[in-house]
Image (cartoon, rainbow, N blue to C red; front, side, top):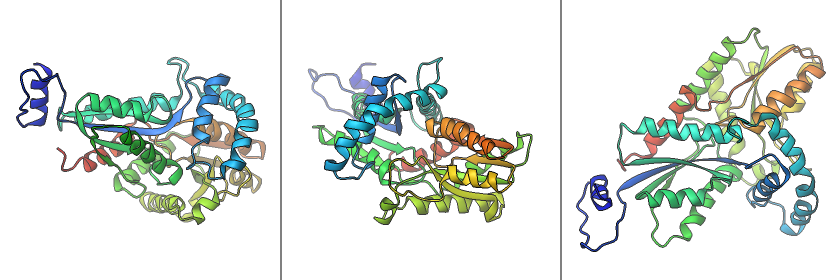
Length: 354
């Protein structure tokens, strides 16, 4: 079957091309999963490239450029690549020479493709990173090259924030601006209160807790933080996090004091959303709490912030201040529970296209 015949088969409608028309692919539907990003390596220059792209995003750092640019290029990019590289090295997938986030996101894409194959052979699933490689722009072009006339973009952030979901959409639209022939595009909304997501979180937590040799007195739901000023400007992220936790407590049948909401990964001198995860872990240990667990519901896949910051740094903080047992509960990743969420979102948002 040549490319014109293939296009006709996928589109379901006749394609009336002249005999001398160049080969084309058409009639397909793309699904692009997008996560935050990853450096290509842990050494200084790959880390610097990654951090420069990330920290240059006006959605991430909203300070005036006259203030932020000298700090970024003069101090941050001189010191932070080395420190971040060492942190990445501790959690790096050395077998594949890549970060765990890249490993998990690729697997999520592959598994979603298999899940959607029974719906239609027209669907092409791929994945990208907002910062680093593979880029959103390159993957949108690749999907269009595969004949995708319609593309669903799924930012893998359960809770909406301008610094995460919005910046993915910004990059998608920026790529469209360069295309002469644009595909139709949909962007999936946040899914912080989606029943499939809440149920998957609860099931995953119950399995992880059942595998422990101790019963946590307190479980922290640690979400990535944002500066308090972003929240005051109208960002709904804090509300989304709180709603996720409230629905998760209800699903688990837990009281408020059993599952506490905290915020991690603050950066710079600004005040961020509180309570801070590290300070809460320290306080609980000082107050005599001996056994805790931490879950990170805002991360669709484990990464530096979960594997190094929570499972590493915060475990050390807890033990140093008198705590005994600490457990990190894995993110949904590419588990059956995690894929049930991504699959449900994709199927719902593809409605009307299939």
